[in-house]
Image (cartoon, rainbow, N blue to C red; front, side, top):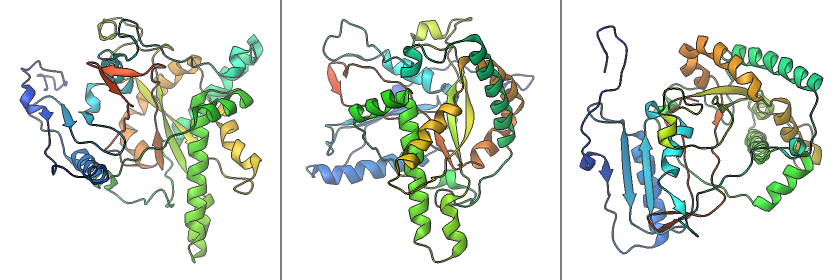
Length: 349
């Protein structure tokens, strides 16, 4: 609601669970493959439905039909006004327990890269140089807000793409292979996954363009393309309780505390099977790494650019985000959880 001065504030209301809990009915007695398609269609449908403005901005959808992967699904549809991924994931994790021993807390992996843990990249002068380089990159990122990506196989450039149906897919990587790359390059697991996504995206762009007869379309495969990488601007650290997040001076406060990094999707410099081409995106991530000392600078700059938020997303090709999950297997009310998946819908990129 708005007060007399036009400022928006939250209003406490009575929550009626029946207005927020949805248990859809699918045809009974069908195969898991049938429910795969039905579930995907249902997910695409609710992603396009707008939240009613006369009740709190959240919904829970309980799917009781077995698909090929699991016995059932629970979908939390939450408006971003409620909080960012860190806040919402922290709230969700507070409801979960360890599947092997509910009396023990969930633990989370370290965010350190192999090189930092081994004592590399130390020294005041190296750290100082990193600060200045990161500030310069941040200023360049601010300028990137006003630059629009061209038309490519991954960007139509048309208006209103956020209102079109979408498809949500998943891809599983071998954690052992990811760890091998992590150790070899001295980076984080997040760096490795990001590099793999960039490499796969660029290969898709080139493959899609190579099948076109038009010369201009063929050039789209290696044209400039920008990814928006979502960055948590809170102090470095793991998840905390909701009680801690809502305290007035919490170091890990509840809310929307994030910003974007503009990252150019690296162009392949060799063939699709060239090791140099495959590793180049991963090394690129390291050069674009933002340390915690830069976060305050970025927050100040991006406060000025807040009104350009929509155009920032619209002018880019893809957006990327990630959240750290626990090491142990999880359970909800003694029901084992196979996995947690999240996505951001309604964005114009």
